[in-house]
Image (cartoon, rainbow, N blue to C red; front, side, top):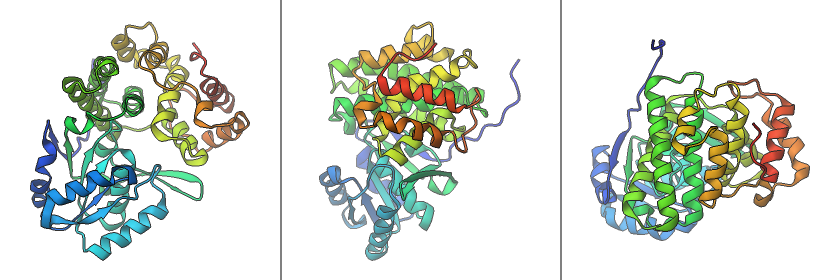
Length: 354
């Protein structure tokens, strides 16, 4: 018997396929806009300039200061650039940092936005915005921050470094894991989450051997869309609370942190909801989802220890305290003792607890 559920699909327009970036100008005009500010990180500034050249008179300029965890100070400078350029929309080219900046601008100005992801973060299809200010990261959920159009072009990911490929993919897998056991999970989101997991499990070993395999890149980007979409449809739990704490308060890199914490957060909840996490175990051919994820991370060369990201052992107590303040809903009760043990295992790189 199927239980009662609510499901709200994303209104975003998805344009998927090799060469999709060539349709950016068409999409700007579809929004009824005429002055697009192209956003990027400093690392991708040249790509943003090339896109602005492609847009021609539809480009209002380039703002290439997007930064990890969406600092409010960067957003304020971007708002000044929007006003100075007379921009009426944004085009965010890049990973989660650039997408986050586009969302932060839209939240404040209610301007339309186009996202062109070049990693597998998935945040481009969620109405969720995480921001940092004064050493703390906060999140909000609003339809204002959901991009109106997302262009998925797998050709843009062909040069994605292997490290970023792996960590951003595991970041996306974390969305699927939390979607499977979310309080507001539903049959549609669970099907999408399971399919997203399968897509990544199939694609990542191929990409470890052949990074420029377009079919595998396409499959991985498909998985990113699915995993991001379910994150936007349901709530987050312990895994995301931990990663928001570690990123916002200790300045750990976003994707790497998700990759390391994922097997341990899944292990924490697996005892409470093993049936919900069964699709992950099945996709990985493992008895337990958490053990399968840990082994898969090793297989594809993912980071597995928080200490390698610069987190000191002395910081673990404070991290546990912060992560258990105002905890997100979670299928297993969140305790300070349990979270401290979880963080210790993730810091050391131990196998996740059974």
